[in-house]
Image 1 (cartoon, rainbow, N blue to C red):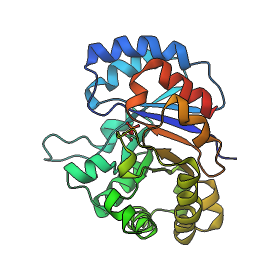
Image 2 (tube, rainbow, N blue to C red):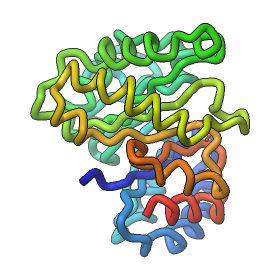
Image 3 (cartoon, rainbow, N blue to C red):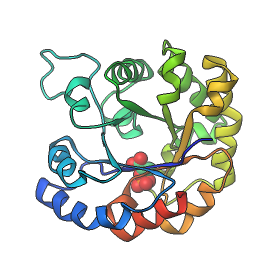
Length: 251
Ligand code: PEP
């Protein structure tokens, strides 16, 4: 059984004081929803303040990125050991990082290995651009992202992996994929690619989320699909009522 997971990617929103005000309202709203793992991924500077507010709840915390080295002269970067003192999860290879910060399948791979080595649960984002989708290249692009991004991972670590299928054309656009379409990519491309890397059993155990314009009104459709195990939520995770309803839909 794959336990549903909903992660909120705050992106570059909420100062420390805004984060405190927001979580003071959000945490009581979602803390008692059972049957779903809940993860908040604020900007790095908010982590300590949010962590304090989540104490005593089952709401978990994640970073939005990490560097693959343990420490070193990498100005502006955050390492696995730094995150591991504050968080349980980390988003890796988000399409915004691939598009604006030069992240590649190779850097994703190094980061995934660094996250696992530091005991973090990586939420690894894959997904095709609009151009790739229209050119019929979805399967090719996404399976390459899985193969190159997850190569070299120990079989014993695969149970900790989380994949987020996020078609780039659906992120922040209000144009979600159809639930059936997203499920088909996960069932027919992502799980087979995982099976090729790690075997059939692992491919059925790894949780695969959908991300891309998930809202309260469409969350139920996505989460009722057999191969979608929850969501990675951007815009809607910054609105207490919306995010609460999305988590309820996954539960
Ligand atoms: C995301 O940032 O991962 C995301 C899916 O954003 P949105 O929900 O706003 O499309």
